[in-house]
Every structure is written in C-alpha cells, then in structure tokens.
Length: 259
Image 1 (cartoon, rainbow, N blue to C red):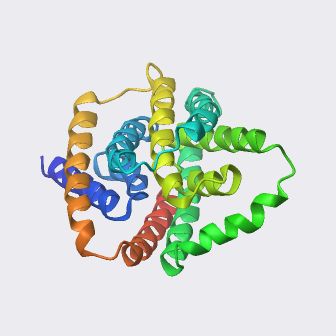
Image 2 (cartoon, rainbow, N blue to C red):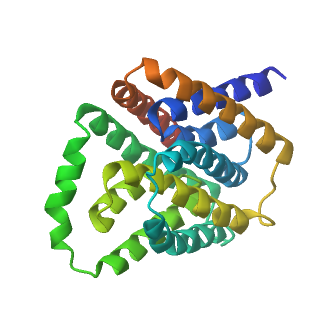
C-alpha cells in the first residue's frame, strides 16, 4: 500500500515537471513503474506510452489555442513516426530482445536526453533557431524524405522504450521542416500523442498490462500536469530544465548500473 502511494506521488511529480518545463518529465515514468511499482520492464515501457500520449494531448491544448500547431507538418511527419512506433513495439516480441537490452537502450537515451536538457537550460532559446537556419541549407536528401526517415527512426525508439522523444523531434522539425521553434513544440506534442497510440497498439496482446495501475498512474500524472502548468508562471523553466537534466542524468546512471 505504501509503495503504491509513493509511486502515485511520484507520478504527480512527473506531471508537475511536465507542466513546468513542457516535456522530458515522462522519461521518468518507466523507471518509477519498474523500480518502485515492480512492473516488468516490457510492460512498463508499454504503459509509459499511454502516459506520454495522454500528457502530450494535455500539453498540446494551450499550443493549439495559441495557433502553435502546424497541421501540415503533423501530416508529413506523423505517418512515418506512427509506423516506426508500431514496429519498435513489435521488436519486443523477437526472441533475442530481452528486457536487459531495452533497459540498456533506455539508459543510453536517458543520458542523451539529460545532456540535451542541461545544455538547453544553459543556452538562450534563440540559439537553437539560429543553428537551424545555418544547417537547413546543407541537406543531402529531399526535405520530405529526411523528415520521413527521422520520423521513422524516432518512432522506432518511441515504441521500443516508451519515450516521447521530444528532444529529438523538436530539432528535426526546426532543422528539416523549417518550423519556427514555438510551432515545433506544439506540433511535436501532437506527433508524440499519435505515435504513442500506434506504439501502445504494438504492445497490446504481447505483454501483460496492469490496466488499473495504468489508469490511476495516468490520472495522477495528469493532476501533476495541471499543478505544474499553474506553477509555471512563478518559476524559471530554463533553470528548472537544467536542474531536471542533472536529475535525469543520475537516474540514467542508476538504470544502467541496476539493469
């Protein structure tokens, strides 16, 4: 009982981090499910997709209202990402794909995500846009093909280890799609929600799902998102993201050691 309470309190914390920094917090859902709630890794990664998808929908609402969702980019990017997520989830059914392989992959991705958060928290937001402007003229593939390949690759990662991959999707939208940063954030949330659906579909029937825990955990994280969104107006998201990045780095090291 105590463990369940702690796990759901941590789910609220995940939601708060999502509300405060706008993304990244969901990457902690799987470690909490695995190491606190004792959910098997493959089931945890599947359940995380629902949490990521639901959080993305909630997060996308204010962006939609502000007109920061580029539907043309969603249509261009989503099919490959959704296919990739489904294929990534189906990879788990292969006999040589073990939970250890998933956990190692997850830990490495967490390391990359944490470094991205730390660096992003140390630089002005405009630097990413300027960097994008410098590099978009040096693509060796047609833009639509580059977007499709990137979407497929990130989608596979999403399905395989249950992450949203916003830290990969947003730069791709800016660099390859010439999408302004504000639109890229809102657009990425819609894409994350869509590919989470197909990723989860790839798991259903192949791994056991604790539906009661999934529903309660998702509700708890949603409460946290609402609280975090309110608190966001009182704190600096940039500094929070940097500090959160260091925390994710520590969790990544724990996952890789504990695996």
